[in-house]
Image (cartoon, rainbow, N blue to C red; front, side, top):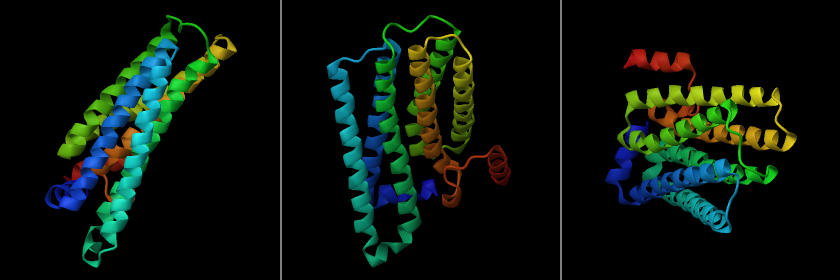
Length: 230
């Protein structure tokens, strides 16, 4: 499905603009993820950083609305009905990327619950590793999406699922630890927001390996079944 969508983007000028807008959304939210991580682990955000995040989020939202408008205009022409499945795919992906922008803002707001530097301990070290994994996966997503690279995508999906599982385990560890309430709140929020960002990246990646009706669904047995069919 994704390979066909990318072919349409490249061959059809109106749809190519949708593809460019989607690529811009990916780029903006990747930048926001990195910036929000810097704010979170520093436990402080300057007014300039908050403004920059807000402006990028506004851009992401405008691009989402532009793509929706382009899809509606495209499908209103009877001769374009054949591309309906691909337009549905794009609308679904756009929503995932828009949600990433929201979660990066939430991540940058988490330091409001705690004053002071984060402790230098195993819990924060694990959270830093999760951050690194999410940012690395995001950096690779644009490339594998553009290339429709199935093998690399399967690797990234499995790594992403591991990251979301690690986030759950970390929340449990923090809840059973001895952090003060303010630090517990901030770190649990950080872990949860990284899980949500990772989950939406996984949804985008799933479009490379799953048909439209199984988008966002990447059960291991399904992935193994798809591998055996190729």
